[in-house]
Image (cartoon, rainbow, N blue to C red; front, side, top):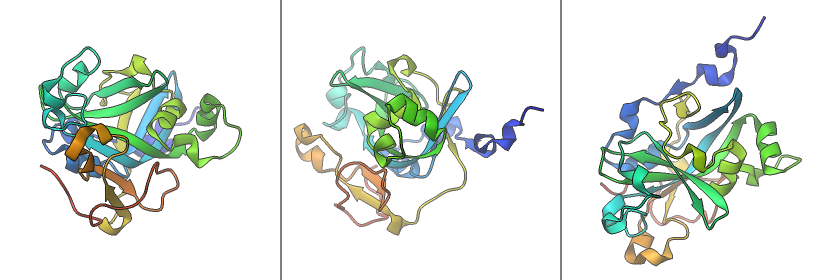
Amino acid sequence: MPASPTDQPWGRWNKLPAGFYLRSNVVSIARDLLGKILVTNWHGVVTAGRIVETEAYRGKQDRASHAAGGRRTARNEIMYREGGNAYVYLCYGIHYLFNVVTNRPEVPHAILIRGLEPLVGEGEMRARAGKRGADSSLTRGPGNLTRALGITGDHNGLPLTGDCLYLAEDGTSYAGSEIGISARIGVEYAGPDAELPYRFFVRGNPHVSGPRHLLSQPGRRSGR
């Protein structure tokens, strides 16, 4: 007798509602995404990981954003849609990066997912990444995690309320003392905006990429 969906871990998770993504404070949403679960289900093959690192990008006013100054191109057009869609783009012609679009239409806010802790389908993730054994780098870093979850440019624009690519919650949360806040990684070109404390991560988690030093007190919320 086939197993019921509720017999599987993802059958007991609650998919995030559309309203989660429509809020106006992208920085707060980036922090709130810590502990949530990113799920892919490609042709019945489920892989999932807990989000442990994010970066917020505040659109037109943020010089680190693809939409800085109101820039609008074929690549970033999805950022101008309603929150709750996937923004996936190719970086340096090598890695696909997965972002969560937030806010109302025409407000190009997005959150880059930088690190995941594998929960389901780790064997499949390793096969996709060409790894044989357990390795925390499997989903550490935005390019690694998309490869592990099978996310490509074909998935750009997918709604995050569907069944193939979505975010869910299982009640996991982190105390303020467990959350690190720092400047974003690799945005030196953004001038003063490069120092904004828009990166959030779970302190001590091996799946967090880049530096782990803090630029502000744990638990403090920044931005509007």
